[in-house]
Length: 118
Image (cartoon, rainbow, N blue to C red):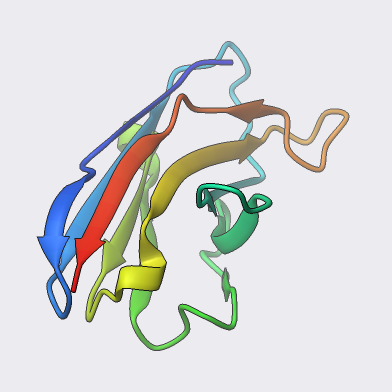
């Protein structure tokens, strides 16, 4: 499984960023893709996920109403639009893919750092 995440950076509180993650695994089936984050000294936290077929979305409570996950099936790419960013959103963001194999998540990207300054 290969996942390449990009789009992280430094932004002021209240600003926006858009993350992207491209899947280039060998399997032709994707059940879901999602985003997780991990802040220093904290456990990895679920952010959002999207079903590849149908596009149903799911969000962690802390990002509901501010973040939007979307996908481009043709490009095997998932996006995370992050608005009204807060300092507590600072973390390394990881994308993940569920290929319907052993699950729940079969592969992880390398992470992209998002830093929100106050």
